[in-house]
Length: 307
Image (cartoon, rainbow, N blue to C red; front, side, top):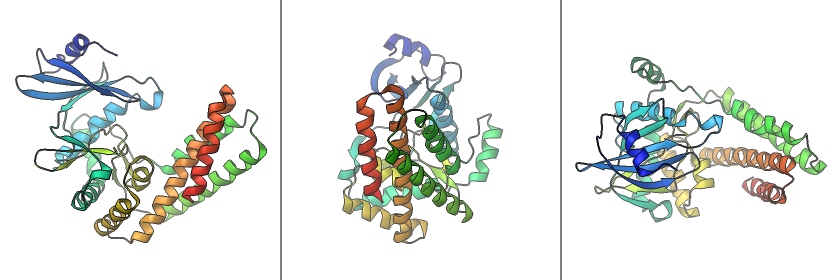
């Protein structure tokens, strides 16, 4: 972790501050977050800490997407103000408000949440290319779920098979991965609309002083044909009744049936959880650590329950 003095020196590389007061806010798997305050202005500095290759450019990605969202009039996300390519940190405006759990949202707020997910998803994808080019930003293209399942499912499964997995586990993983791939191939044939997905949907949202819901943490934003219901079900904390109401409101805004959204949510939940099983199996055979074996079996049960 950086000292406050080190963070202040980094922040001064921008033109936003000259001698900021620095307070550590929080850290996640990929980043450390600091509050910068100077002359009554507040900013958040997000500093990359993960060294895993797939996460190294996530703040640059967040910068590109947030810049485009602001350009398109989105006012419920942070504004990206400065990205430092050399030091890999991003400065955004600080959103004043209260962190509120999804479970504590009213029906009106859940409706707003669904409407904002729809507003993000339906932004013009084709215009994003031109925007990035004209502003010197890195463009991030459509994330093909078939390529993702090959990377995080089949490729990791091949790695896991180099060890000694029980035969019934090997058969179950292989069968389930093929079922998931078949579903995604059928989705691709349907040529669904592409849109912008938040990615790392947070279980707590910022309610500002005007009562508006604000989204944050966009390092895993992407162009996708799914807007994130399965992620909300897995990582969120809506009650079953709240989730049902959210699906109903999403069906209204996305102009589709609640049944079709529910089927998509369950299918994608199965895909995500199966890939989690494969990761645990790979870690088990590579480390021989029993905790990964136990985690693998626990995650298999979650897949079976999601089906």
